[in-house]
Length: 364
Image (cartoon, rainbow, N blue to C red; front, side, top):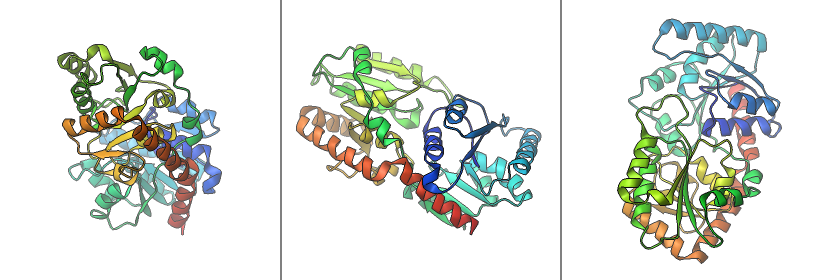
């Protein structure tokens, strides 16, 4: 039973789609519980998963947390899963004790960068777990320094075939890109740590040298806990930089695959990115990638082989973008090698097989 905080489309939901779609590769059957509702409920149900929503309230109310834990305990008595997997610290907090009451082993899965100042993470680490699964060695290192529980690494996988088969023609038409035109994009939730502002400043630096290039920012602020008006700030930044007419904001999209296919170059500009699922998706789509030389992307991109790595600074990023836009041979070579990397390492079936191995280790 996989328990996730909220049923919105995003990295955790994409992992869940893979865990359900290819469960046979891991030797398990997947039930899913969300603590808050959202569109991923219907998406997973269409794949045949049994999906439930507890509709938990925020953790500010201990009484509300207690009600949710009792509801989950009742659910566990009826479903009797072999193991409960809490995806993210908040899910671990809601599920670990009810699972212990019902004598069901718990695995905690961490998809976010470890935050030593986070009270939620500190509480999660105090609760019972047989094993912790991290989505990268970068995240695992932070966990191992703070827990005695065995920490294993399972790199997330993506639907490689779906991204490889995606058609970007309609997306390019929406951008008004003519044949031979170039598109540079960034895909992800609109939050400051994802670095869309850094990406736009780099795009402005190369605007005069590449006046034909279109820029696209794919994603919205849909999680429900974002603060401020970062999307509005990004639009204002485009106008300040003088590139407002060249940049398209798609907002939240139901399927990002066509946008990966529409891009000639995909940038991942996150700060301390825990892994970098968008990089894997871009490689699967046959799109050249530039990522920051820090955190999880170091475990995905081999610099100058299947992508470029650069310092997280707008000048360095602009230089890398300029290099790939100016050198189509290099761009195509990196994209082709990235596609090979995706087929060999990013497939969701591999993720499910690795997850099944770790679940059996927890049961043992």
